[in-house]
Image (tube, rainbow, N blue to C red; front, side, top):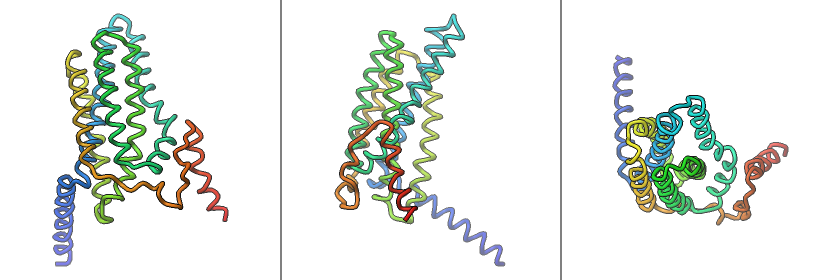
Length: 245
């Protein structure tokens, strides 16, 4: 009997968790953020994967070594901003309104995708690689915001479900973007990525503004004064000082 009761309780908990996730997706507190991050992750990987396929089967089809080198270069250019600018992104997320940062980042994505469309249309590989780097910057700046904003809009009992939805949807978007990038025709990549960027911007405008920590006296108001690699190192100094007291 106790085992049966435990089993029923477990089923009830799972059912409640599923309903909670579905309910979160329909709220203005969470739904626009979910859509914004999903579309952004999808777009990043769609463009990057499409570029790899264009290089492998068109630009450098006769030279497999060059194709492999260019594909690796594209991957490296996308990842480099995460190393270079993560400290800046974290500082900006603390020192500025997160909803405002999101709208600015998504607006920049529209410009980047328009540039990517032009690069594919004229067949400029250097310009397309530059767009890959810019999209890496876009993801780097948006990454801390999408997690930092959750505690400001979700109740404590909703945080686990909200974080799980954001994390899971990100990986699904990456997978779907890579599949779509390999299937779409070259001529369709530019217009589609531009439309998706526009939808992401519209979703970001639907989100409520979150409180800015720079308004609190406990936060250094110079947190927005950024140094490329120094920002990430500076964030650890208060933590070490606190541990030494």
